[in-house]
Amino acid sequence: GWVLRRIDGDEGSNRGRNLMVGFHDTDDDAIRGGISRAWKISKESEYAGAYEFKLKGRPFLAGGVDTVAARQMVLGMCEELERARGYLLSNTYTLSARQGSQSSLVFKIPSIGQDEYGRGGRSSTYLGISLNSGDDIRLIPAPGEPLDFVARDEIGRGIAETWPRGVQKEGMYGESYEWKLRGYPWLADGTDTVDARLLVGRIIGIMQSLGFELMPKIDCSGKLADLSFMMFRRPPTALRTLPPPPVLCLSLHTYDRVRLTCTDTRVVEEVSSRVRASLGPPHLPVDVVESSRWYGRALEFKISGWPFHGMMCSQTALAAGLVILTMIDALRELGWELKASLDVSGKCLGGGGVVLLTVVYCPFPSLFFAPQWDA
Image 1: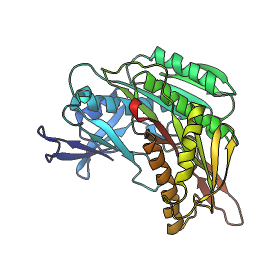
Image 2: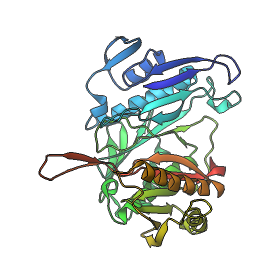
Image 3: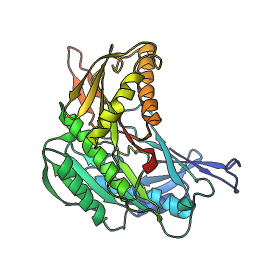
Image 4: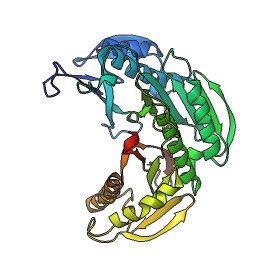
């Protein structure tokens, strides 16, 4: 579900009403308006003290161009909640361990004085970017809104300059604009995994330079092959800035590798010594780095043991968390702000042995950072 908090009065500390809505439960007219702009509602009813919209078809397991409409529905709901109620997406969580579970979204009304977030006046612009089918990037406008041709052209230029294998074809796909890449960046291995993360970082930087802020990621599909949906919002007062800011990526691989890369390669060299120092005393009880090397366009650290193994005990989980948090703190001290944790590699199924067993392999999310002064 989604948790919305309506603040009554001018003071942020005043108690308000909590409203739980979701992809399954809602009683807010703004939600109804956002849904109906992109998807048909088959029926409405009370449901266990909440209000349920049953949607036609299966939007969260959609295929083909319906995947675009399903994401437009999410954009439409967020846009309507801001326009009509003043709510902004604040955070997202996964509250279910079931395979294919979608995100739960937390909305809030921003503090008084943040005029760009207030109701009334000019509306904010919402755009979505989805990574699909192992090799697709789609730029998705809010339902009923025209495609942003400036964003399309800038992203297209960024793809051509960042992804070494190039583009197979591009053009409209439903209501979205799609680039089909050569190779499979979202199912990559080897050094292509580095280039895939650089590509996502480049897109984030381009959108920031166009005045868009990256909202919390949304998992709105139950299909294993679908990755995080990136939603961007441009306040009415936002200005374009050039050149795009650098975007840094911290990613975890196999059981014991950490890779650091950036759309500006000079940044990796500038921050590497501080990040390396954070992985030993006094920040950690012992030095956890076995070795380091350049891996493609990334600096890679090999960590002692298998801290990122999927079948970990509580002590290993604690050690892995300490390693990640220590690196995040080091980057923050250097002026880098964590912007998003995104799924850039697709999930896959595995199995084998005498007993029939299906295992879902879920690659680690990648952490993306931008300079704090560009936030």
